[in-house]
Image (cartoon, rainbow, N blue to C red):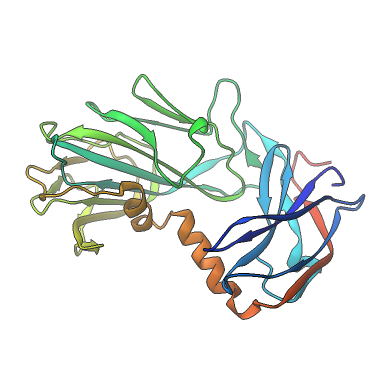
Length: 299
């Protein structure tokens, strides 16, 4: 793995930036010495780029990290034969704005349980969905994948971002006119967990696809909440939201992705909590290695 560039990153509320980088040695080894600074909750972690895809090791939470604790595992890629499933799907419907439009955000958590990274081919994306009838102004949701990795055309959503082993968040939003009622979300393949949040006290969801839970409250806003596990198909689901509250969600991306447990900020906060006990004046990651995960396609 001597061709892999390895970079030491710092992530913190005061600033985030790469600190140092090097090419891995012939056996995949790398070594960094660094001085911590600024916010005591800063996270330091090592990342490597292999095949144009970034992979991350666990955060450096001790003064010296070496051996398996600092292994940076990268993966072979494949554009077929790698099954990616929908671990969860979250649909958040805001109250209508002054123009009578509701912003809807959909968040998919994809799961790759294989030992290879799924990449798009020239004809097959890594993720595909459809927009509901009447949807306008589709856009990539804040905090999700890069905007150039997702396209909207002909009522279809396609993403070309790689899906490495583990989970990956795909999120996008669109608008629906209040007059578009009732409306359905686009049909999808099976998902292990479906959640629908509607900012409307009079909202109902028809069909037996989901059942209602206790309302969810966030930032002074109340959402009717519907969930269901192991949903085979959402085609029969219809949302009736006739009135809505007086105000729409201002920062749609921030509110929605926090609710859906998908914001990058949530990830960083979790890393910060893990690293508090390891905040030290300096650190060292040495004698560690970049390792290619074994797979059918690995040499």
